Structures are given as structure tokens and as C-alpha cells.
Amino acid sequence: MDFGSVPDWIVAIAAALAAWQGIKSLNAWRREEAGRRRMELAEVALSEFYEARDIFKWVRSPAREDSDPAAQSTPDDPETRIQSQRDIYYPILKRLADDGDFFGRMRARRYRVQALFGPAGAEPYDIINDVHGKVALAAKMLVQTQQQGTPTEAEMARSGEWQDTVWDDAEGSDEINDRIELAIRKAEEVFRPTISV
Image (cartoon, rainbow, N blue to C red):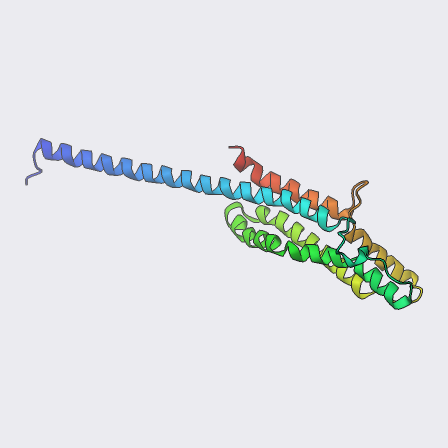
């Protein structure tokens, strides 16, 4: 039985060591590449939560543009008064619609985040999605339920809850702002360690 000469063994060992080093290097590169992708995703995701907070500040702001129907003066007949009350909430719906692409991208990113960071990564997205739905629903209900006559106590209470949802309490905290800040804190807990590496 011939096992070959010493130089053949040296070449074979050198080839095996080179292959082992190549595999080791490839695995290190894969880990680095996966870490880089995680870091990039974490940066984008966290910045989206900060941007969402600013968007909600604008959406829920009582500031009006000259083109907003609510900024126009209206005659004092009952039907026009009802339309004028509805017009107050249309800008909120328009602002949400204008930022629909942003929230759509954010919702789509949720799945990638969940795949890389687990269920804890999806939780802040769920909170922001819930806030978006509550603000949109409250604004729609305020537009649709304006009516003539004196509202009942129940209607006034319900309308007050919706108004608290659509308007930002610039003086202090409110439930919607508190939920947004909770989403940001949870996002920072998930993404900040990856960014800070």
C-alpha cells in the first residue's frame, strides 16, 4: 500500500488547512454581513419611530392652512354650521392620507424586523398601528356624527373622547402621545443595542 511521499502529504495538509481557513473566513464574513444588515435595519426602524412621532404631532395639530375648509368663514345657517363643524376634522384625515405611504412602508418593515429581532421587535409597530387606527377612526366618527340640534350627554361624552384622540394636548401628555412614547421606548430597547455595537 502506497501512502505517497512526504511532499504529497505536505501539499494535502496545506490544501486542507487552506480549505478550513477559507470556510472559517466565509463564516466570519457571513456573521459580519448579517450583523451589518441587522444594524442597518435597526437604524432605519428606530428613525421611523421618531419620524412617526413627528407626523402624529402634525396630524393632531390644530394648526390650519388657508386652503383648509375649516379656515374659511361660513354663513350662520344650521346646515352650513354642521358642514363647518365637519370641516374641522377633514385636515386630520387628509394629513393621515398624505402620510399613508410612510405608514405603509413602516407596516411592511414590521415583518422583516420580526424575522430578525423576534416578537419584541414587532410590538412597537403594533402600538403605532393601533394609534394610527384610533386617530383615523376618531376623526371619521367626528365627521360622520355631526348633526343638528342639542346632543345628548352620551353623544357629548363620545364626541369628547374622539376629540381627545384627534387633538394633541400640547400642554401635557395625553393617551395618544403616551402610547407613541411607549412605542419609541420599546423600539429603543430592541434596536439601540444593535446600533450601539
